[in-house]
Length: 136
Image 1 (cartoon, rainbow, N blue to C red):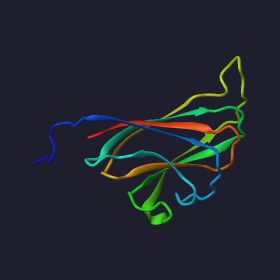
Image 2: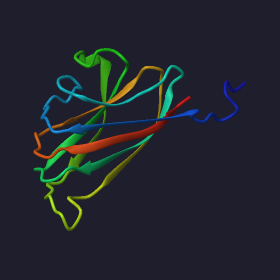
Image 3: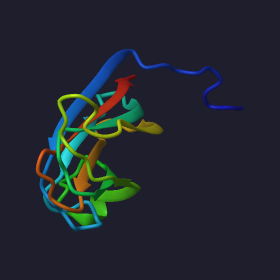
Image 4: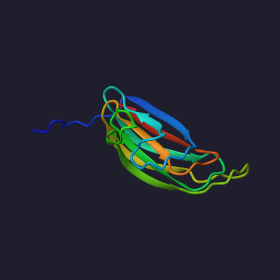
């Protein structure tokens, strides 16, 4: 007999954000990380992350990690979910600084789990990352 025969939907919106500028070359989720999303007491659904450049930046790589709710300094608490190249961007008063990048995730996260992110190269103006989902 199936354990769950009815779909569940998020009850409360959960939107979090961070501005990232610092470099972190670790590929195991340790070091300086930005916490983009934390699942609530009953878990959460994480729909997507949107990235918008804050101005002039060099090219870099964004790494997204799932963290099991433990300390991020312990590599075994983290798993690499996705790597995305972020292009060099130029500040402008008359056009977009660069592309807006949407990363669909469609993840169900257990209670207390987090989505963290790092940039592989330091950038001047930063990238604004917004995680959009909801708590069950």
